[in-house]
Image (cartoon, rainbow, N blue to C red):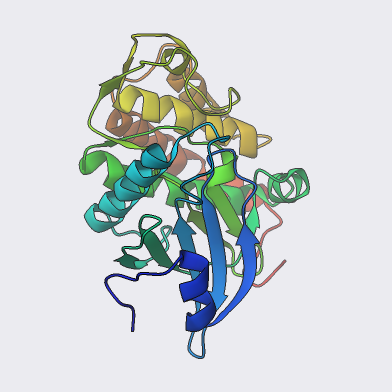
Amino acid sequence: MFPGEIDVPPATYLDQLGTIFTRFDTQDSGNIAYGVQTDDARYFVKTAGDPSYTRPCLDFDSRVALLRTAAELAASVTHHTMPTLHTVIESPAGPLLVYEWRDGDLLHDPPARERFRALPTEEILAALGDLYELHVALDSAGWVEGDFYDGALLYDFAARRLTAIDLDTYHRGPYRNTMGRMFGSERFMAPEELTLGAPVDSRTTAYVMARTALVLLPEPPPALQAVLLEATTARFPSYQAFYDRWLTASSTTADSVTNRSTYTPGSG
């Protein structure tokens, strides 16, 4: 269905492919993405934006490089929280990454985030469990967190499904902070992401995932709270060590969470 290469601008091709029903063009990065409806399906298509656009924080070549990273990540890890990458189309304006469309509300949006935080503890923990399981797969494939925050999370409240998006700035393997203050939200960032020359590795992934829970889960059960605090103070030596402790703590609190939660299957 999709060609390997086109010789027209992305928007022109997508207009020919189907109906563009939404456009995302306000990102600081300069990327432009589209929601496209065809006769058979909906797609999310991410591009590097206008090559001549020089005002964003990343130049065109950097935006293209990050899209290549996103394609490499999608090829290396398959998980139900990640939209399927159907194909990469080459164009005069860089690659078009064609993903399946996922419904959901962006958790960086305050009303959506507060609605998520108001969910029963059991439902929030299920979503966090999916996110943490995804990062086991990413960690096993050698990927280290970069610029992760609630803007990378969609939640479909009707389907109770979490989706992780925009993992373009993850790195294959440990790396050094060459920026000082790296890209990201300080609510989620590890100290090394604010320190020039500091090593960034799977310990960083553990810290950021713990911060994610502390932001999104208003009242963690005590055993889980202890794990999250350790991850963000004394620190774990690796993401896997954090995840193992999280699973152990989860097994000891599952019954108490279920008993005090008002969540039941089918409730909304």
